Amino acid sequence: MNILVLNGSPRPCDNTAALVDSFTEEARGAGHQVSIFQIGNKDIRGCKKCDACRATLDGNCAQKDDMQEIYPAMRSCEMLVIASPIYYYSLTGQTHCAIERIYAFERLPKLKKAALLLTAGGSGFTSAIQTYKDAVIGHMGAKDLGIVKTVGSQFKSATAQNQIREIVRKI
Image (tube, rainbow, N blue to C red; front, top):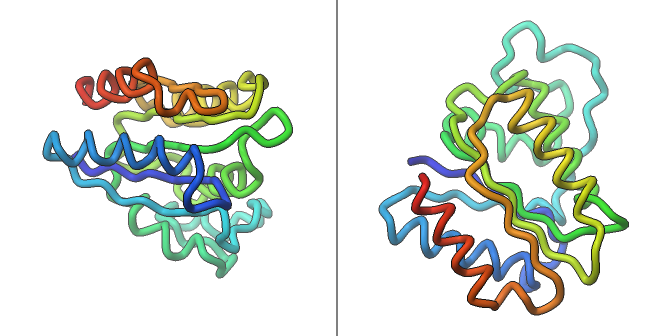
């Protein structure tokens, strides 16, 4: 399966990256193709709803920012994994913007499955999970394979690693 991972953390070597690395190792070990985009430091602006994309619905957004690097992977992904630390009770701003910009497709053309990987210093997962469920599962119709929520160093725990293995097993 062709898997796209969007890592919304601005830190390339943090807890979120460790979860992404665990998922990627498991998925590649199971024979899946995984593309990772570290979007936390990218220039990705929110959707302006200018509707220029509506003519083709194939990722031709009028905004020319770093989403142009990601759109080709979005066209072909069969599974979307959103990974993000929790910032002020929600996904990072870059993650929100990337999800908004899927509007250029309306729905990802080959998307069948999805998963969510979250890290936090404390609580506050509710808003992030709701965005994922509304946009990716509800609107785009992807099958939810699982949500991994970790606090602090729990990303290293056997529980988190088993949850990742279970997601990969369901692919």
